[in-house]
Image (cartoon, rainbow, N blue to C red; front, side, top):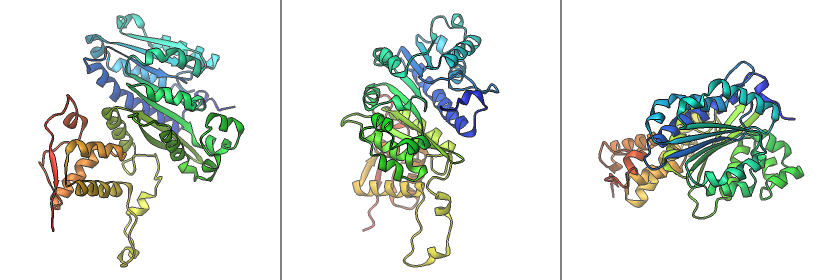
Length: 374
């Protein structure tokens, strides 16, 4: 039986997971609210639990209500509707959740613009019932570890087929490694070799799962997937974020790197970047090259990208940066350095964000040119 995290204080890993979800929600909501093209949206928490832990710290459903309240004025001023769907298949948790929501949400105060539904359905049943609606508007979907085993290849394909949907998976890498060779695991992930899971380092299981999901993406599908790995003592957990929209990716990468400015991918030093960055006596030897940190590898890749093409737009650099899993600030820092070193020439006020590169069609692009020294 899985431990009920709502019957004890949330641990540090759970709190980090919740913070990432809440921060992304706070970044996602104003984008939708301010848009003139999308009159409604849906926020789904398919494994909401009872709403809070044993000492009253808010879980994901109550954090959703907090976020909605934070934008009350803007929501009421716009012609929009937001539906919040909270679900837990456990009847006891579902009852506790309903009580917690009723205490904190007054539907009459929202003039019909925000509604909350609390369900106690099996994930697949509820997902199937809501799928038609999910196809019709922007959505933010949160899927916790207790239902991740139900996200079969078929469900994943339907999820990434949604055109305006961002999602967060939360899974237990420790669980994956422990049960990889069980028949139930093979039934849920038929295309995943259990030996790959069993042979991976504990902290790399999440990356193996991310690669598995990436291989399920059909040609032409614009979904981008990004990881964030969480470690609590010997246990490893992982978030997988998915979005088709560059702005959604930008916002997730910004908050992920704010969580950990070392690698933006974990709440610990997953690739030993601290050690890589340390100067060493052996670095002085002619044939010895210090391993690069994740940030340094990105900068070398971006420089090579520009030099190979000779001339690129700021939009090209922006999209390259997102595809590499780095925040827009890293693009600006790298271009600034390359310009100072005489490697490239460009406008010193160049921007590398969705607003400066893509928003409202194609704004006037800024050009970055490689400087030939031959």
